[in-house]
Length: 535
Image (cartoon, rainbow, N blue to C red; front, side, top):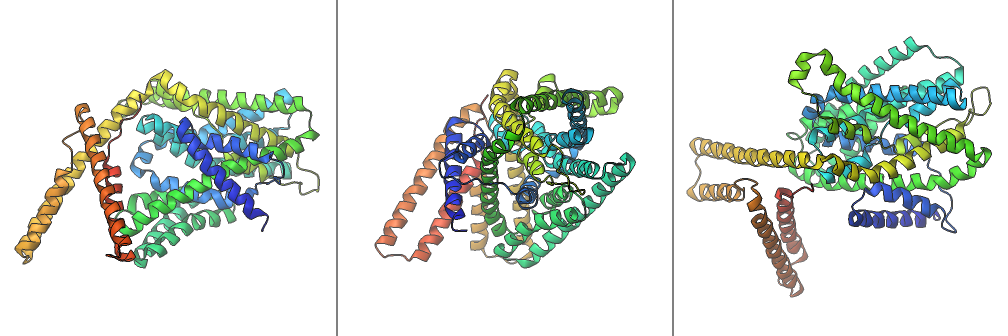
């Protein structure tokens, strides 16, 4: 344990360094973390670190899925559910079958092993491409589709993965039985996830203590994931359903104090999990190269190149029909939801980056079959999976900004962003009007003093005055200048309060309370600030 602690500190320092460099270089932090992990693995004296598969599938995956589900809008998810399902279920199955066919016909892998490899490398990862996509200001619906696909495709992958392992271990698999099992898992996990979400919200509402509520929020994804997984399910579907339920129903049941503290807590947790996960994924390169000595280098290169080519071609071959064919057969769908242009479709097909879930599934392969024989091609599957992650994450991750600029998708995202902020300003204004009507009703129902009414109306006028008239380009410079001046005034207040503390005129407790008010005001300014997106 003492030997692991210095390594943990090195990883934390590497995480901070890659985050800083990623911001300076304007690339996805996951790419630098993966490359840094590979470099650290070869530092003299650095012991090998093998990533336990259960640490990802059982320890890391639940909070990642849950956090992304809570952050997602159920309304937007439901509006794109058809396309998300076609990608998360259909594209994963199609890609797995394509990999199985290509590897069987071209390099002679058994059908079961090829399908297992296909199931492992089929699901795109959501972390790295979305981090880049948000910075580039891509259209909102595209982000929802990609994030929804990234959430749901892990379930399809893990179910196919288990079917393939069973088929290889037993030598047979009934397709009707597998299809029935898949449907049963889907229905049962949806119901279980909704139940856990409902129960979690009620318990947190009764607790009325931010520390207890945040602790319960941390336990929620593990309960939603581990129980279905224990009984043979994926756990992913239940966790996604739980997160979406809380996202839709939580705002009226979660207290303001819990929400403020929970945002910072979960941001840090997800940052550490994602960063360390990609660092440790990079560490696996050294171990895999040592194991690859049992295979000729040509076989590894050929298998990796073949699988990478197949998954890229398969995604493009599936995405275009999945988007355009339903509208050819349904005129009502075509009128209600017109087909996007080819640039939108191309970009969805291009973002096929693979991530750590694929590696974790490969690492989770058993070493032996029930008969005692070694699991067929286990090390080859591991190495090919890592190569797929490395090439797609680095290659497609670095290429995504270039493709977005080439397609000119940034302007569409910018226009949507402006419209979204205009709607937000209008919603804020209408909410203040509703509050004013509520104040008028209070005045009629209660005996309020003139002083209290004066304070409440002053609050309303102050908040109304903070809303801009709109987001006209000529107002952006004045708004930015005003925001910067307010920050300078807050800094002056903070400096004065610190001098009062040093002179002994106020206590530390008073200074913390004042600082908290200043911090909240500064955070509020950042929350309202409009930032232009890059074209």
